[in-house]
Amino acid sequence: MKLLKKRLGEVAQGRPVGRSVERTTFGEVAEMLVGDYKANGRRSIDRIEGALSHLRGYFDNDCRAMEITSDRITAYKASRLEKGAAAATINRELAALKRALKLAEIAGKLAARPHVSMLHEANRRKGFFEAEEFRAVLSELPVSDLEVEAFRARRRDEGLSPAKINHELGMVKLAAADIRPVLKVAYITGWRITSEILTRQKHHVDLEAGWLRLDPGESKNGEGRMFPLTSDLRETLAAQLERTRAFEKETGQIIPWLFHREGRPIGSFRKVWMSACERARLAGKIPHDFRRTAVRNLERAGVPRSAAMAMVGHRTQSIYSRYAIADETMLKDGAVRLAALHAADAQRPSKVIPLPLARN
Image 1 (tube, rainbow, N blue to C red):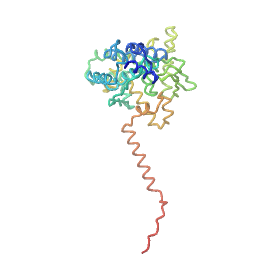
Image 2: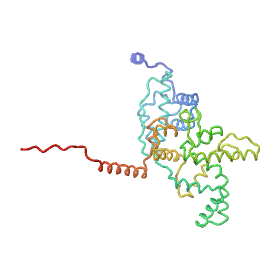
Image 3: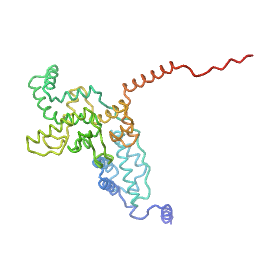
Image 4: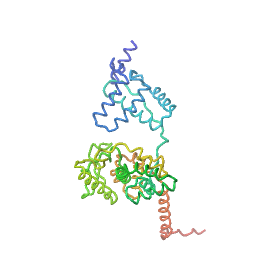
C-alpha cells in the first residue's frame, strides 16, 4: 500500500516511475553524457572522460542513479579533497555529474535530480606575461644569428662548457623556428593554442583584408571569430606564410597548415616551453597565461569590453571578468586618472551660490 501511494504521488507530480527508473545506473547516465558531447561536437570530450573516470572510481558504474543523493555527493567532494584534488578540478567533475543527471531526468530515467553544490574556488590562477617577460622567453628560443650569439653569451656567463652550450643550442634550434610564431600569435590574440591556433590553416589568414579567422564550430563555444591584424601580428603571420612557401618549394609538398613542423601539424611542445621558461627565470608560467595577458592588454589599451570579448572569444561578462586581471600598472594608472580628475575639479569655479546669513 505504501509503495502504491508513493507511485501515485510521483505520477501526480509528473515524475517518471517504474523499474526502468529504479534500475538506471551511474554507468548508463555517464554514457548518456559522453553521447551528448559527441552528438553536439563538443571539443572538451577528453576533459569529460577524465572527470567521469574519477566519478566512476567513487560511485561505480553499477551504482543506481537514484542512490546518488546530495549527502553522497558531499562525501565525494570530501574524498577528492583528501586526495589533494584542487577545488576547480572537483567542480569540473561535479559539473559533469550534474549534466549527466539532468540528461537522465530529461530522458525519463531519473525521477528527480539531487542538489549539486560547487566548491569555492580560491585557487584561481592570476598568471600573465609582462612584455619584457615575453621577450625573455623568446630570447631562449633563438632563431637569428644575433639571438644565437646572445644565447651563447648567457650560457657562458652561467659557466656552461662550449660542448654543453652547443648541445643545448642544438636542441633548442630544432623547435624554435616552429614554436616562436605560435607563441607570438597567442600573446597578441589570447586564443587557445591547442584548439584555436595550432589548428589554423593558411586560408584562415587574410593579409589583404587584415584578419585571422576561426570558422563557426571551431572554437570552444562553437561561434566563429575574427581577430584584426595588428602590425606585429601581420608581420608574424606574413613571415610564417613566406617560410611555409619556401619549404613547399624546397620539398615539393603542399602544406595546408599555418603552423607546422616540417609540414606536419605541431603536437606537444611542453618540454621546449618549460625549458625556455626555466632559462628565462620564469618557471611555472603556462601557455594559458597568454589568454589572461591578452585580455589585460586589451583592457589597458581601452578597447571596449564588447569588442575585446569578441576578439578573444568570451561569450559572457562573468568569464571575461575572470581574465581581466587588475595588475599594479593598471591600478596605478587608475590612481593617476583619479588624481587628474580631482585636480580638474579643484580648478573649476564653484557654481554654488552661498545663501545670505540670517539676521537675528
